[in-house]
Each structure stands twice: as structure tokens, then as C-alpha cells.
Image (tube, rainbow, N blue to C red):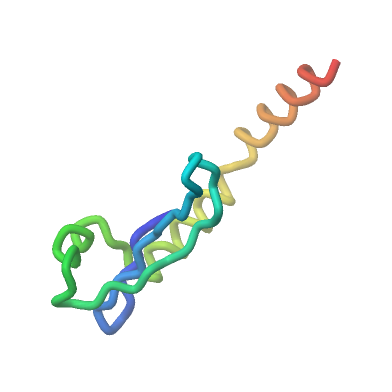
Length: 79
């Protein structure tokens, strides 16, 4: 999950919620506005929505070799 900077400057910051024993309950985004505590900490790593979409498209396009290797590994493990 990435920190995403919206056009108005608001950041969507990933947040994970877990139970007391450490089990994952869910993942979500929390919106952090300019001036909110933590905004300056998250801003340097934030991507615009366009940059995030480009990364996602590139990952999907370049994922074929990795997917093939994973499926081969999975097939081998099932034997």
C-alpha cells in the first residue's frame, strides 16, 4: 500500500488494524490533511494518483515472469 497525495493536498495513508493477539483485521486508508499531525512525515513518500496508477500498470505489465515462476513453484509444492 502506498501513501497517495490527492489533488487538494490530502494524503491517503495506509493503516492496518489488528487484534490484540496480532491477527489482521483489515487494511484501510486514513485521510490526513495539510496541518494535521504526521502530515509532514508522510508527504515525502506520497505518490500522486497518476503516479500510483502508472506504477500499478507497470507492475501488472512486468509481472508475467514473476507469476510464471510462482506458479511453477506452487505446482512443485503440490507434488
